[in-house]
Image 1 (tube, one colour):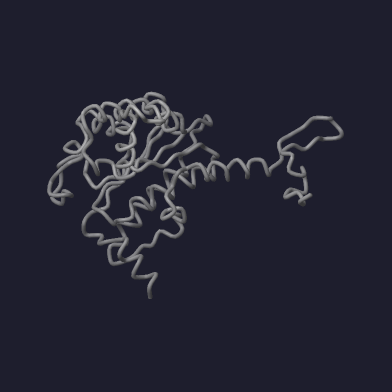
Image 2: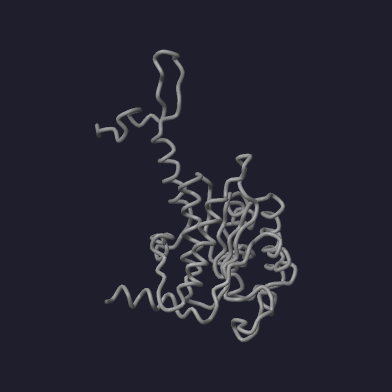
Length: 249
């Protein structure tokens, strides 16, 4: 028989007080639950090591990257409301490819699971679109409801690279139902996108296209109500390139 990992409860998850004859949860139970939830996030291996502590402030544009990281730190710090409920609003990290948006979003998600024990999910937008389309096939083993249920019920969801692919109108309707459903259920969602929510400003990303050109105006309108934008501009440079250069020194 293998030795128990927890010396207090012998891996049963409960500790019985011999005086009151009442059982209480062992502290190891919370640690195991958090570990299970981290395993279930669906984060690709490439990003599983992302943390705010190792978000590299590279190059000369540190002020903007530092502000983005600070905004994420504040979001985590203020995630729990005074009444104990979770905050309803999310974040949308916007900027050109390679600026560290996914690193920040994944870091926030992992920290929320670790600190508050929430149930989280990570989903890549392009894969989500492909998965929704695959449920239309007659021989599909997965129904649309089965695919969307984990994303609808999770406490926090990260939708990475929103707008990276133009979905069909029917898929767009499905996406709107998912995102609007999370909004109506007061469940926060974090987004990353290469496309700005509006066309304002002189440094519009991706040749002046906005997110509404890639998804739909109704979905973007909902994002304005459910997520605070954090923008990383073009002049920051390529975060991914800087990190790789640092790793290969």
